Image (cartoon, rainbow, N blue to C red):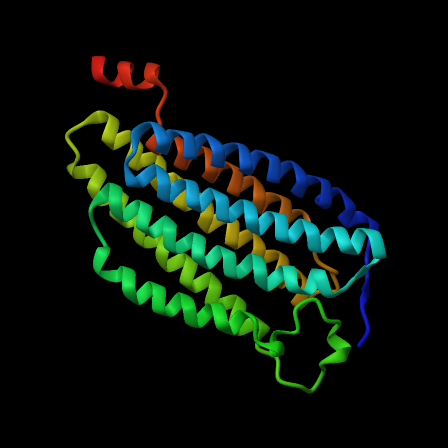
Length: 250
């Protein structure tokens, strides 16, 4: 089995991932400390989401680091892709749980989401995905990578859109200004996650429909949306005191 050669233009992304890991761990620690302070479930669930995103980023960075060192996308890189995707599934479940706690809606969908998530988790690790394998090595053989990726995106979009709609409806009924702002920020955070996967899809389409080797600028755009998601979701739960005071005064 052959390996795809590493291209130097991808190297900045490796360092970008390292910076993202530092930021992600920082946000995870801040949210965990906030849970220790408040001792309620929502900060705990959101800190788990942040921690899982950090783990996914670490996995991607290790895989890409192997390619940087060896100059080829090899076994660690191939494993890092389904590892990161499957970690995102678990993060999506905890994100749904977090939103369910603060809106008190959607709890009946939790078990079906777990069952579907487990099935999708297994599918991502099947050998017929050919993660990171050059196309010429599996031409004419069963290839389910497109369906696995679409399954992950649809699964994530269902969760994000459901949370967004729930926040929109709950915001209209909320009497408290602080609660309305928190729900609005969480709604915007979900829109950012929709944009995150949209950027990833565009990058994939560039690979599929053109001769682009991948890791386009859209990957950077995707992770910028992820950073905004971190910030918005954090402040949806932990607003600065001066913001809370200003809302209450008005």
